[in-house]
Length: 172
Image 1: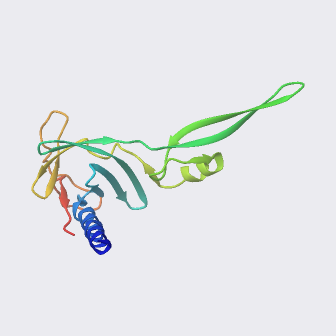
Image 2 (image 1 turned 30 degrees about the horizontal axis):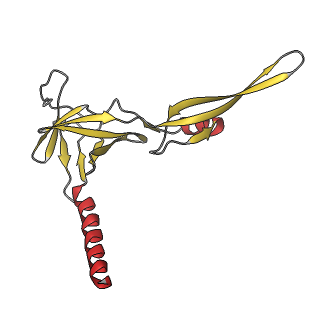
Image 3 (image 1 turned 90 degrees about the vertical axis):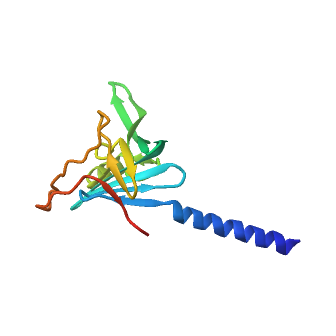
């Protein structure tokens, strides 16, 4: 009986690992964007150019062949101490402030850490990612606010050749 349970557990565990690896999809475009889709309807969007890097994460809502990306903004809490000096005494209060996180985990950071992080060229930004994408075979096409598909060829900064602004699936 124990061997049967062990075999069943190993089979389920192995199939779970395989399912997780097979359901992640990675899409790229010609403009430095990368979109990673996970099986639990979440995503990570990355944008890279030279030494600059931005990212965002969130959930995906599906409507037939259309994906709607909802951003989950992640914040860090910066702890600061503000001191006021009166004529006779000094009083200090603690002030917390929310700032965009530099990683996927919300943290409590000091003001010195925040000053250090603010000088980095990576940031959590969501203005570079599309809000809505239409899936057609192995590519994702941006859906404009008026509902039309964005198919006009664009010229990237580092090339003279124009490309369609589609995300293409990278085969594993």
